Length: 225
Image (cartoon, rainbow, N blue to C red):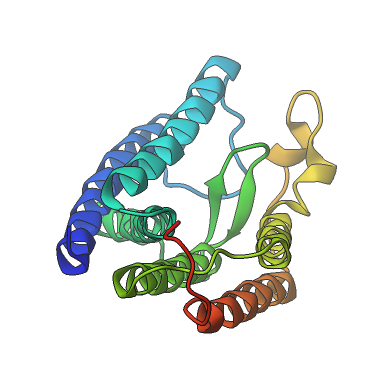
């Protein structure tokens, strides 16, 4: 599969998956937020919450499976996964805007993910991460198309994992202290301030180490990964 066709397939797949995701969220909001989604959160029943956890995990598995099927090498597979994930996240908000006219702006607060705890932040934050994922994914596809790719070393992977942890923590830092047995604290909380500095730090670390690796990726001839 050439890169152009692969990108078209990734876009179509992410667009359709985002539609499915949005339809489920629309149903949930009609059940739990009939007046429209807003904070504080409504604590959903345990069986429904467990179903949501399973659905989110399955979504990630589906995106990973698409990447594995679309790429020729490890670099390409991971690239398609990153592109698919980023596009899916962006299209999700596009669909929500089309159907519910929500969010009102990129600074509107949302529940972004639930594993292992709720991730909460302004819409702009995950969208910026999605754009970074897409950009990195495209670079990986370009590297794959040019030939053998120099594998990333432990230092690069460690930096990427650290960057991801910082960004995830920016979404959960205010959630952890509010996790009690019955969800009372979380159900009374209206988020006001997001830790933008953590997002920026994580993004800079991820992008800088990725760019540094990408520049060297073809300096040494290596078997394709």
